[in-house]
Length: 144
Image (cartoon, rainbow, N blue to C red):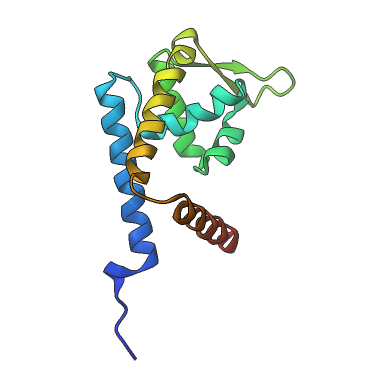
């Protein structure tokens, strides 16, 4: 039986690629003086698409646990990027809304995200990207 080659495994390569993309996004955000992190960006993308989501909806959409999303929302609220409002029908739930400052960040943040993806995909053919996306989607499906 051959020894498991962790350094060359699918999981290891996938993790290294994610970390490299995360760092590149952080670099682009820093260069553009954005006051958010990639983790905060991940949550904000859902609010830019659908403002007023609950923390639970943000957790599900961003594939983060609720405690992590709560911490991120706390920071974003402290920075004046989002605000919590009581849910109109359930006092136990807060809905998260973008402030004017949060809405203003969307264009530059999206450009940073697109730049990081362009960097990551440089030199990769469309056919290879299509294959890569199919493999990643199948991986996600397998792990649900």
